[in-house]
Image 1 (cartoon, rainbow, N blue to C red):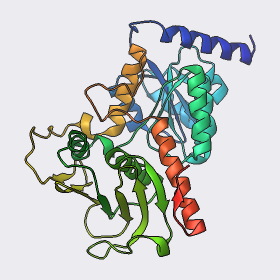
Image 2: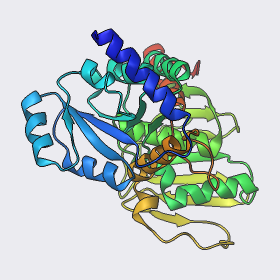
Image 3: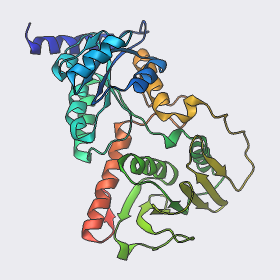
Image 4: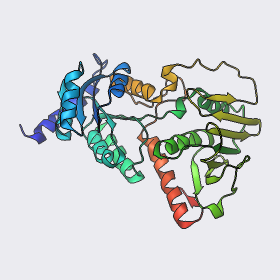
Length: 339
């Protein structure tokens, strides 16, 4: 058989397995990474996966790592060999953004369910292509976010949904880290609390405010579909702080280690859940939900007991559109509507 025949046969077998209910045994996953990452491999195993293969940038690193790791049967020499493995169900892509995009599209085209351990910056066009590939093949996809799984963030979302707080009026963010993943995490929370972002501003002369109370410098602003404005500052003392103003009062969420802290203007009708690894580790929770979805042949973002549920490439696409609008705003020095 040719490589093309092997590839076609692997895709066919994956489609057949996706129709089998219930699935027998753990789903299989390969870890694709630029360097050996034993903690990530262990996390995938604890999340319900059988890690059966590795693909590393350095083939010799992969050979040594596979030989030292029980249960890992294959060290793939290249991506084509991985895509043509008929026993493989999924991939976890722990790669730098420069090499991630093409691999992401290829795994989804091959019908491999795909997990991203963090929200990388890939651009809206590439994420759109990945979504189209997943739609054609039926592959599931998940992107591990951390903030949406924190208990205070989820509690505020429930309070907004129930009307306890009223509609959001303004969100100020102090001390938020820069970088691709932190920015994606923040935008994910903003869209959940305040609705879709409809316009952005990254031009200092056009910002609605230059400073937050206490002196932190506002770097960019968002206008959301709820009517709420969002002001973001990267400097400021202490842990990152989100302050949400609503008709019924003000909410403060400290996005520190673990579950963070929460101050609400009313009594909690139910206790906050005890901090657990499952709730606070967004990657572990997302990997677990993806494994369960594969076993049940259902969508990974199917609600279990309400929000939060795992984020997918659809959520990352929303983030990328906002990022691109922010770049346009900085270049054009004006407010820019999101596409």
